[in-house]
Length: 263
Ligand code: NAD
Image (cartoon, rainbow, N blue to C red; front, side):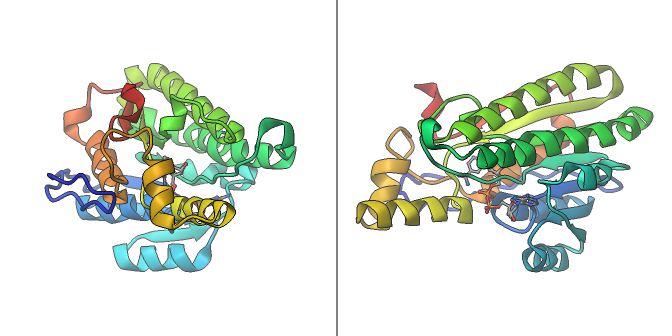
């Protein structure tokens, strides 16, 4: 790619994976990484069910990719558990961020982040596994974060949830190993999505500094490769983990973080 700027470039070489005949579920598919994964999986030939709580955005991505969609709120895991049924591929992607010091962290926000990012993936995987075991094939990719393997101040719920998701993913990997089911995590650093754009804007307003300075001095301060990751890069790795080259890869976590977690 030869690109070290903060503005970055999209990956030029694409992973080719054939997932024709496979049914995939992508949560949080209306925006950012989820939308990029939906576009990539559409290109692999997989049939897809896209899920998001925001109707307009998930409708748009579904129309663009020829997928089915459903509007559902993953903070109510009882109502979304059945989404995992009859699914060959699960991409647990939906997530959110809330920032505050632990001693001021609202307990209801802590609960919400854990519900959406751990409880809902558990319920969806739990519903998907019996069908995957019957078919002897399944792929689960959990979109974790560098915060699944590294803590950060002010992000207690997010760090806790992503560490929990990592544990869930590894446990599913061990249980699914004899059934043709793999389970892995993708752990991005900062990706150029609305979730990050919001954090940049809030920081810029709070500290009265330009947005570009927030990206360079705050977001990328610990990242040796000085660029934001593009959503398409996460989608490429996710698709590859669903393909035949990754058949022996399970219980793994892939840091896609420009070297952040190498330090
Ligand atoms: P985003 O805000 O662009 O998209 C998240 C999507 O999830 C949105 O469409 C949102 O509506 C949906 N969602 C949130 N809560 C939901 C709920 N309760 N029910 C249903 N849908 C819900 O964010 P993104 O950056 O694309 O993040 C996607 C995933 O990637 C998240 O799990 C996030 O933690 C992870 N991640 C993001 C970054 C980053 O820098 N952007 C880095 C590491 C990990």
